[in-house]
View 1 (spheres, rainbow, N blue to C red):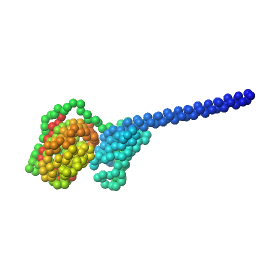
View 2 (view 1 turned 120 degrees about the horizontal axis):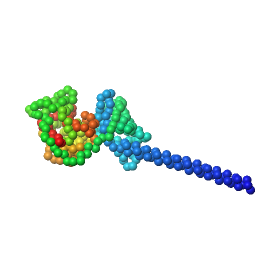
View 3 (view 1 turned 135 degrees about the horizontal axis):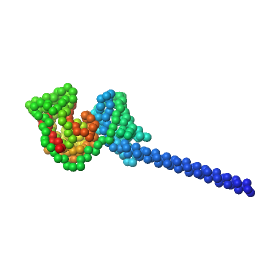
View 4 (view 1 turned 90 degrees about the horizontal axis):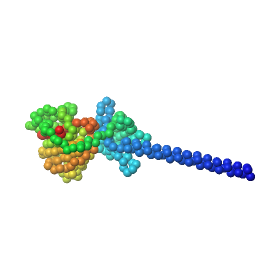
Length: 329
């Protein structure tokens, strides 16, 4: 009888021990799962947003830009802007233990392989490598892009004539200069260097008068970072961000209000922070919309800093006869 009681007690103790061990293991697994979920949530929250990126191309800085956002509750997607071209959609951004990555197909670049972007979260922002469509690998660093939100209405200063109608005073060419002034018109008769103003600006109102030839292409960069497209787009074509008067790759105009080639036309642009309003030949085609980031061909990715007016001269013949700016005080 005593042996039976002893055996039952030992059996109860064994089962109790197993249950305790099982509960402890289950509890530990639950804590680990919670910690993993919390880490993933923290990493996701840190990565989501807009990033101003600088690529080191063998000692030469090239601007880039990335936006990461959630699609639903767990899938990360985004947009990427390289040193050239327009904003490209990113179908999926992988994120694991603070490291992330994605691929995008080439656009205007040489080479036929996908770009491969790898990065990781760091205390100072993000950093990583980019392997181009030509197979070259460069390092890069990124910082969170500034909001550029203005809390008060702008107070405008005095209007400045950026082009004096006589010569290139106040401008410099990026490369071998082909620009000249003919009969008061700033003229680029062929593809060549871009033109950059010496003065830099934050917020402003800009008036530009221009004329392009059939099939030609140019653009006006605001602060040297955000291109307003000038090209020979047919009026009947559906508006797009890469066509006439679009903020290249980001914002499509409400209509293509172009007058056609060999005709003088006007842009009236108001830029405050990231918000842009664009009037084309007297018609408002963009009304107080946000420019998310830099466009391809930007001078740099330092969005929080003042920048110049920059005119594209490497895409065909173009003429400008008036460029005036009214900066904020």
